[in-house]
Length: 77
Image (cartoon, rainbow, N blue to C red):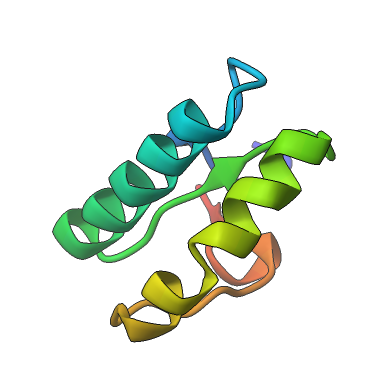
């Protein structure tokens, strides 16, 4: 009613502060993006999260996904 833009998280990357777990979540994030066309993923600034992102950087660059600001994928309902 207020015309606010909103979105819903599709995946939480770091429910567990574990690099292997986060890496699996990163891959699931890409799968969701491929299936739905967009994905909203959130995470904490944990050391393990940054490590998992660094370890998966090359793989992520090979994927057909773009990282954008959340403002690009939220919608007005």
